[in-house]
Length: 379
Ligand SMILES: *Cc1c(COP(=O)(O)O)cnc(C)c1O
Image (cartoon, rainbow, N blue to C red; front, side):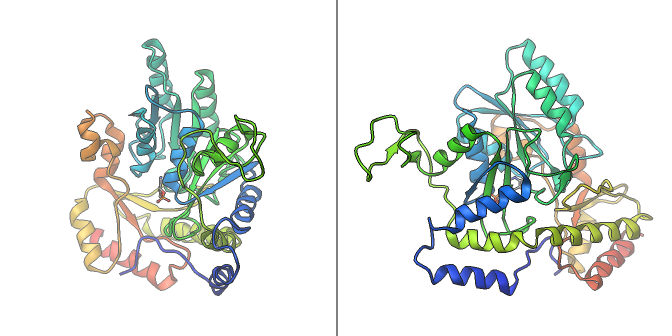
């Protein structure tokens, strides 16, 4: 089966992890701060906090912004459940803004209208979490300006987008957001097996991210609320979590990050190849984007039944997938009161969406096979 996504591990990656294993520290050593610095250098964000998953990153991003009981957070239905769960972890309530049918990202017009309404009935959110779906950047300039005028914080869920560009800068630079969150799960741009990071330009937010990800405990006496009792003293200031990344994972991340641009270049070339060879089929191709990190290549069927096409492709050993069943249609979210029909654009996309294999090591032969089978099934 050709998978829809796959990581690439080099001998250099293996050596980097083994080297850490042979050293004194396998966690809380030098690798995590070095990885944080490398992420900050790559993205252009001033501060990076490495954590053990993208989900943990979203949680501490919300905590750092002060999201808590009584607050409202907005995100999009067309994402992985973690984009919404993070707000609920903090005791906040969640609401959604529908997507744009072309970009599959948050619809800025819907956002503008929802902000006007929310202001009128006193239900403005504390934060908005936008998702760069499939690696395609959201219209951040418009979104950030809108949100700033209403005092709403902006978190970029960039779990699909590391290595992509927006407005001449790298995704993660946080020029148009308060915080950006990354994931290093194996299907993402680079991997640490499990892992994630939180990026920001604000020293206060960065310090809160570090605090919430490390039990709420500090050893920095300038941050302590009681006078330090001595060099051994640490003080818990808030209720935090153990979301630390280990040095083994960070060493893998440092090694992977060196090949990120190469990975993205390969993804972009393969996406281009799909555009050329699938154009004649009765499908809608994803937007041809030069900025995208091409995490996923999602096509939309025009006339064919998705389930039948999915099954035929799987029978041909093509590991297609579907991104995403809208979050508000999950049983847990239905219990919270969301209904089918609430977000028509996300629902319509889901009905016809199909993710076909795209990853840096997808060979020319494999990609040709995917294209041939698609022509056979849809032609
Ligand atoms: C992968 C992903 C996450 C969660 O990241 P993990 O590292 O798996 O916890 C969150 N949001 C989106 C959009 C993702 O794709």
